[in-house]
Length: 131
Length: 341
Image 1: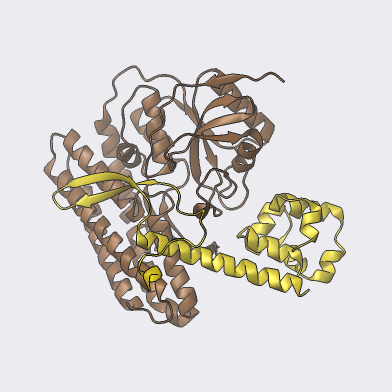
Image 2 (image 1 turned 60 degrees about the vertical axis):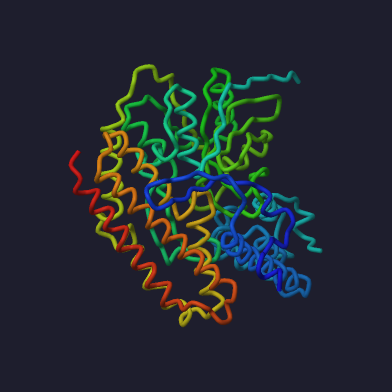
């Protein structure tokens, strides 16, 4: 159970940076320290990323199974919800949700696709194909 | 294409909070030595709001900070420093040209940016958060020199990336907001009136606003809500929501405990400036102890997040702890309100 006692990020790229934080000792002394995250901080960050990765993987499986359109996968990958995506792409929430259907997505024109592609910072070919 | 190179001699100092750090560094560049807590306190960084019906990253929105750019704007206004804030620039190209012109004139310029596509930022923080601040202090061909106070060292960013983060979309979109101090501060500045104004404003924002979701009242409301979460949303979601509170309080560049440490440090510095004002120093001590309670709350909460199926500590305990914190904080603000300078 060593892993549980000293949790580290599953992703190696995380937790590489040192940050400045303050602390207080009784008697009126505020101190600045530069260091890596403590255990509690890492736990709660890891919890969030676990959930995000879970959602992304879930969305990927559903896209591959043909249940939803690739928009859902890229939306989850960019940590968005329909409301935020509609703000970023400039398409109304109702239309965004309508485009979640694979059949509807196939019939979209290039102009709408380009709006999504710009919001996700990818090109149209990538948008159409999820691997 | 010719490569132009303009780099301003700008000292990068790491700080706990992005905006007050940037403000403090900009003051330093213009010849006024002002620590980060001081900038934070005078500029009313401290705040609390809880907005359960607005979701950010799938959890209720909780904010421990004021609206973007409050710290810079208020601190310059209260201290009587000539500064420019441009709220909104429609055309990205024009915004970048303005930035270039500023750099040529030797003015380091602060920008509000979105974090999600900021390439040098620690990957674990890359969420949709549009209230980050950084200072641009140099240009070399296509690269910009960036001082981001969350990072230990200055960073580089390409033109395209800078445009993308300055025009990030979503809630609180930056829309190319930029700010700078117009000229060097040559006359000595009396900090005392600015500190008094800053404290009064913060006290008013924390206990004076008659709206239940802001300030100490918001904290109590959230404490009552925490108790209901497991029944209402199930254990998994409740623990994620709890995690969101803790993330907002501890990570995301707050210097720890949702800015309470920084504010305590500000009160202490202010007290020393007012010839060891006993009440200010006492308030600072109280604030420091409250901040330590926030830390404890984080530890308990994080343990709760870890074993979410069978929470070690009940949500009821957490809620009580939070109410205790709210009471303590209210005492501090009430004390500050009564102080006669």
